[in-house]
Image (tube, rainbow, N blue to C red; front, side, top):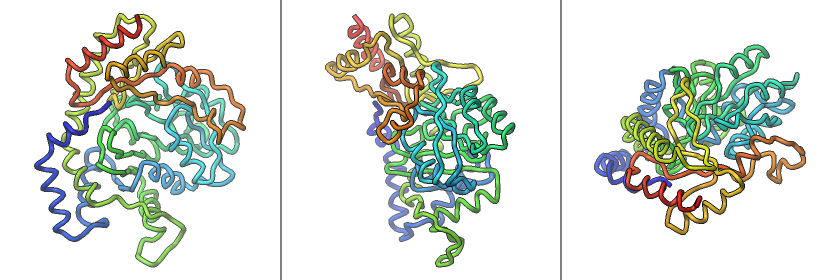
Length: 362
């Protein structure tokens, strides 16, 4: 699905140098390397504050807690995302409320989100899924009309834009993941929060360090959520390449759009003019109930694919008691198939994927 070995080989010398510098420094928790990465991320994203953390999941939890979201509150989000999105809402003590997706973009439908607002609603967590932005203009208007907070889940969309603005900068917080497969990924777990608000940044930094500003002086119950210094050094090596690697992903996606355009029973990813899609995944739909059959046929030819996600969140055992019907998310779960994508994917490999897909559909 993603050739990380090619990436490591391309960066081998600077990675070796960065790792050796950390080892020789003897400083492995926070310190200058993490501070330098936070400055560089803040500059890249054009925000006042970048707070690194140990996972994208923690980024969501800490964002919600810094905003004061807790027991008795409701948070609106999508049922078609990785479990961490809703898990974070639950860990903050709030109640997740699912609104269905736009079937073209797989992102939260603003009209259905508006219909889900109640007097207990405190926040919205839109997810920029597969690298495609949620409809942030309408979601921001919705939040403004009801006095709601917005936490953008940007785990899959580092460097993506909506109407020219970088994703993560459109809400109260932007929450990112540095899981290795992400557009900007570490070689272990890592996460990031960004915000323009000084008070929110202070609360997030305190929460990541056991609820303290000064060691041993704890003001609230927090977390041990500091980014590992070795991962910070690796991310500093990779950050200067992220724009070029996103362009390569976009070029690979454009080539897929060209060579797969005439396939019957296949729906290609939506590309909207106001969105700069960074294609964390290239996700198609296989219609007529043939998705699993097609996936098996591709696997037999040695081609990796993934289903993100086979079960919408409201259908998981933990939420089945809600007894919800969200037809767009349910249809997506039956039909989606993600093809190999990445900055080091070659066109001959894409041709092989296309040929295998054609054969499977025949």
